[in-house]
Image (cartoon, rainbow, N blue to C red; front, side, top):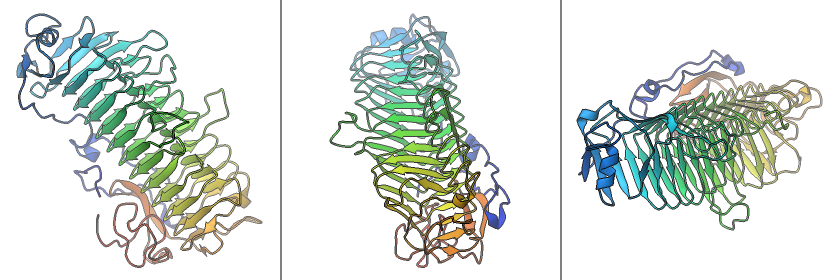
Length: 537
């Protein structure tokens, strides 16, 4: 399985939680050396095969300047930058406007920065223009009028194409899209880029994130990029409106929003909206999301979906994110994730996330169907109400398969997971549910209503008083899990030697691999981790 290509071999002991599954010490922050220096972020771009013209001056205008060179080339030009401009700075006195299809490739001049001095937008891409930027840094862009001025560094018109590779965006500000705003019907591809301390939240515009915002009817694809310290209103880092979204191999660290989705906010994955008859797609794969803090719903990820949209969250770590009340409503749901649609959450770790109201790790609703598979939930917290690990406010079928749900807490009830109707089609299979607690109703320390028993489950301890068993036929015993560890860049707990989880799962039932991507053997273990896997996928 493809991971974030670690340079270092890391299996860090996070906390000596012992057989009770406790402890909540954090992993090391995902700095670039942690993942490997070339894995995530701007990296080193490749030079173009050929150039139409070369920028030779750092001046804002005149012979050899970027502005002058753009005026001299025809459509479909590739403009390079002379090596003498390395680590230089183009200080703009006005916005650069791109009215012809063009590629700007600064691979030969690493460290070249375009700077707006905090006074102006840096680049305007006109309607219908295809623009590609490679190896450039953008800083000090500003597009603010108090309500709807878009794109502090780059703004595109409608029907454009925007490609960003190996670029860095820092300290840009706008009402909509602090660094980048893509117009209507614009396809946007972002690869190997870094976004740090961009601000799209000042106007509290409902369509604005700190780093990247879109305006619908295109496609947004983000790969191998780093988002840190960005601030927005709807989406601290990324806001996506009415279009397919794909995010892969990215880090979201310490972003914040005054509304939902401190890392990512998407409003459906199709081009139509609630009346769509064909669903779109929303996918977040192989991402690390840490210390993102939002309001209302979705501390890290708010993935709002049409009932026909497919939503996939896969191979992700959601650690130490939170969602709190914004002061105007009682909503504070989904400390790590809030989503709906046709949903699969697969091989993910939810650790130490917090929701003020419900769903410390995850809050989902809708008709589904839903699959939660090979996931780890530990030390997630709900301060007030219910669903320490998960709040399942659903009407459709859910399968919770090969999950480890340990040491989560809810202020009122259901430290493990909550759902609101005993007749719902919710099945628990080959999972471990242990040491989850509630602050008020100890009869519901782990659950309230009992899910269907798919077999192979372990729970501990026994319910208090009139409380229900987690699953009717579960094995009631201490699962004997080891400490929380970073195993192949996934936070989880391995069963100890002699653990009752070993070989206890339902045989010949999906999934065939565990949370790390290792193949399960013919006598699979309950929970997210296979202690002695056979083959690395």
